[in-house]
Image (tube, rainbow, N blue to C red; front, top):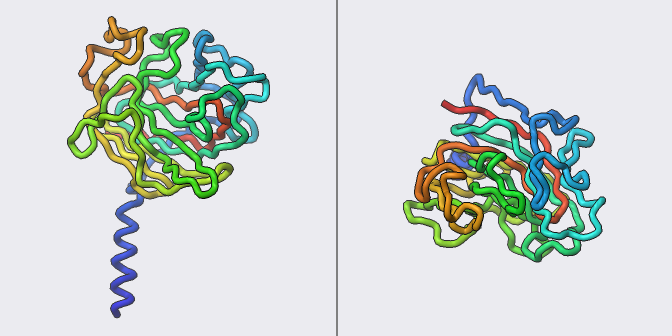
Length: 262
């Protein structure tokens, strides 16, 4: 009986970590597996809409970020932006890192990608801007023996609070384990305006934060005119655009879906 109680307690605990399911949920695929319909590329130093050197590709049901037409990486940080801004939703996808990384990419970009949430409007992104103003759910993969959690939070041009305390650092690691290059990882985010965001990795809740606010001073393009990206510094960020990242290391995405919430 003691073993049974322990097993039931463990099962209940694990169930609490899983993303809650509801009857009648209607998830909407936002990547069709065939092409980039509904998505717009923005690559640093290139105009909005130019898929420079075929960086983003749809092949065999997978959305790929690849660099086989590059000789070297020269600050071409890339995002692929979904067409519709959203405020309250759940996003789920699978990703995997694929090596090797590009010569010329920064050391921190090795096995590094992510999905941007509540991103600024595409037409406001400056030509030479490296990253959008957004909340980044950061994806990392680790080498053997390396401790490198995934599903982290980073804050380009915004601030967030964790446990009621403003996060001072640019990135905060989640509680996830480390995943190797080449392994598919399931990620899900719950986004409820500026109030709360949660990250799950393979069904386990690994990060929760709240109070998302605009803080674009780190971007020279917007330091003097924060209204260009949605309001004055300190304004709540209630909605925005989803985008998938390319930072110089090949990465693949599949099964990208959204469930809108009330």
